[in-house]
Length: 583
Image (tube, rainbow, N blue to C red; front, top):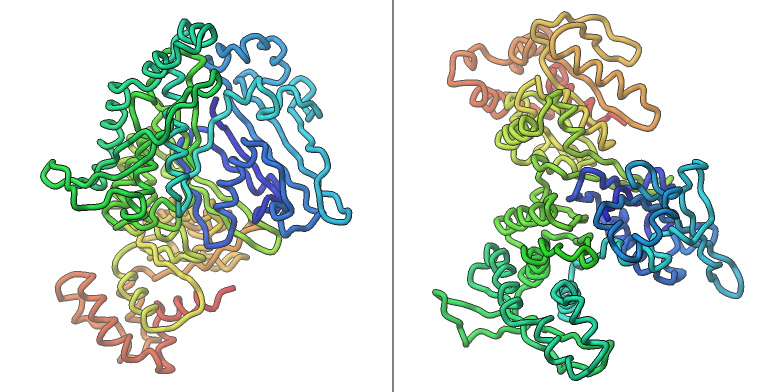
């Protein structure tokens, strides 16, 4: 069973309606949730765990602890052939038909209504299932995910990796995974033997946790963990004695970290959880999810288990090099042939890889009306680049990132300026280094003017305000339209104009300015209206290339005159001041 979408409203820091706070998981196994501090990213991760466990709500779980705010969860899941073969579902397959659409999607909602008395409490939880025959919600517990044993076993299990996990939390994760592995190892005949005689428990326990299986598991885990920390190895040891009861036969495992030098165990270095860095501990927990033998152990249909990994700031405590390696592992763990979906809340642009298939980026914002999510995935990127195959998209994205590896950093900005190359980049970065402004403005070097429409679509979709500075080249410059834009009718400038015009027509989005050098940067900065001492010199045109020339123009001409009154006659400076002043 896979999550297709999950919506949250009025839970902790999340508010503004389900329509504004829903993440689409369809065709995305790895999702990075981006946003400023305190916008509600961790609350969203916690929301699924809260939903899955059917946790009793507390006052602190209500948005702003206001009893008028009703907590809502809406979940869409897709059942597959494995789900229908599970005993708990197979017997009720016919009765489920009205709750499933032709794609086997199940849609449910849970509502928690606060009530006011001597203190705030909650009424009985209301549960709804979408009736595809009647095309509406039905207040019905049967068919509600997480509300009865029919579906509880099939729901993706949340594995929450906190920003600061304790030793107990790390051990809880490993024991949960090994328990699933143990269930897969247990044959039907063994289950019968267990019921017949407790004398069989020792023999069955060996089958559950046989040394070969545990050793294979450790080797697979360490293969990934040691790609991050080559000299450290995860070791497992039995934590306590078995409880000799029919209902509790499992072992409990503890984690310690063995240090190695040249392949030999180093006895002089402590191995406890407290003596290893937080980054290594969190990476170890994630590596525990990557064991190939568990991920592929689907021979017994009723033992297959899906997971959703909820990873809070995976970049914490890691060197940038290790961040990139962990990023690779995160995307690997949610490949289509494994039972994992991954939702990460992150502040690091280094964790994002927009070249990956089956991945999404979600930008979370907070404003007076509440929180809101904006999402892009590989299908959106492919459509925006107007290319047909995902292979072409990957090539295009790799070329863009090779040219400017800091593109992903712009997804965290409040505003961006889209420029076509290094000419404007040198001057813009120099200007923002010298002039103190209150805005968070990021400069995006698009590499070529032809890429600007693509980035316009991305920032528009992310609800990030963007401005454009480009050359008119051979396109005819006409009078401004009603929006104050130059209505180009030819060239790539036409596409830039059309996207700007489309964004200006949106009621819930603030788009920026469109500035143009006519016909290109150099002649536009040699106009007669510019003071002679501020003009772009012909001497630069005869020197060693554009980036070098623009650097001279900035360093020798513009920078020394930033405080002069005449500087406003220079187009690029006028453009920048307009952008800074634009509301």
